[in-house]
Image (cartoon, rainbow over all chains, first blue to last red; front, side, top):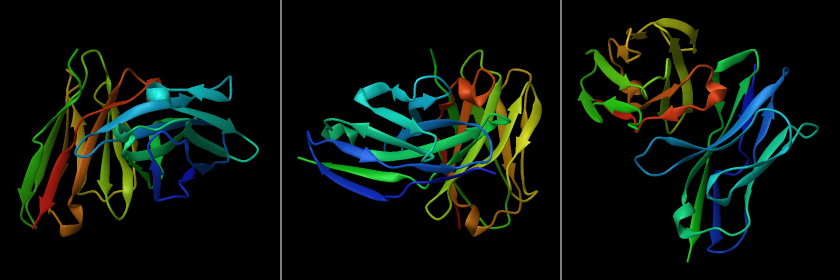
Length: 114
Length: 113
């Protein structure tokens, strides 16, 4: 079975500062990894995904993430955040044997201050 | 291109009642998944349908059920509602396997009183 741990429930940061949202996963099989963003009263939007290949993945809105197999991590980064990045961010995993089902972390609330 | 449409957006029901939620996927998408989102449990997988067949099911009681129609539209039903069923129910559609990118609807906010 897979599990996902998002180590920080809240991350406050000032506008234009860099940010890293941490995600660790646990799985006995190969996995696919995802980051989603949720704005208030909205559904989830895919930021980026890792399926295979290059461990550095670039997504929308200037976000990127790096897959580290030895540390079982998939941290999300952005070099300079904007007020509009304030939202809830979810890390998710699916196994290559059970691709229909996403297992989500508990989420990290990113709060960007002016 | 229209996105995933969930109806209704908000719903208030009484304990013991049943409820049906609807999800219309993006045109051409054959896979529909359902998730429950609560402050305490976070996002949890309910079930997934592909071409009218349930391919996967999460760890929820039998009160939670679903189906998919030939046009890929899906419904989920919750019978004998409990207060703990209050949640945001999210539907996601994709072309096939989830890793081909799932597009989420805005959700149905269910409140059980």
